[in-house]
Length: 145
Image (cartoon, rainbow, N blue to C red; front, side, top):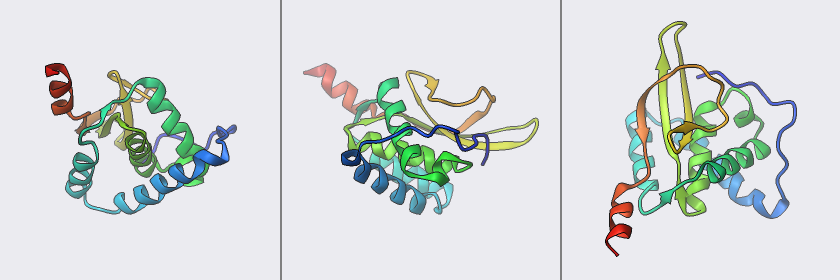
């Protein structure tokens, strides 16, 4: 999977926020080695009972992941996107996690979205093949109260 390069200015992250980001990155590297169906299953469980992430929450999580991991700041879109989603989950929310492909030229990519918009992604047009959106059962149960 490709698309992003190491940013010249990686965002800074206060020391007190680093442990959660590092834990999310470590878990993401393990999850990223799984087959796609297993990745989907793990993320479906992780998203349970989390509120939908705002664009600001998703961007903050993505920035934190990039701040603590050179591999996620570079070409590692799969672990970067998984780590950002997991970090959002640690903070009580869930972005939409996507993995997809483009045909011309062929490429695969993984990213997170909030409010239907990709978070800090270049405008390469990928067709999502796997999408893990926020848990709709939470939205329904909150609306019923």
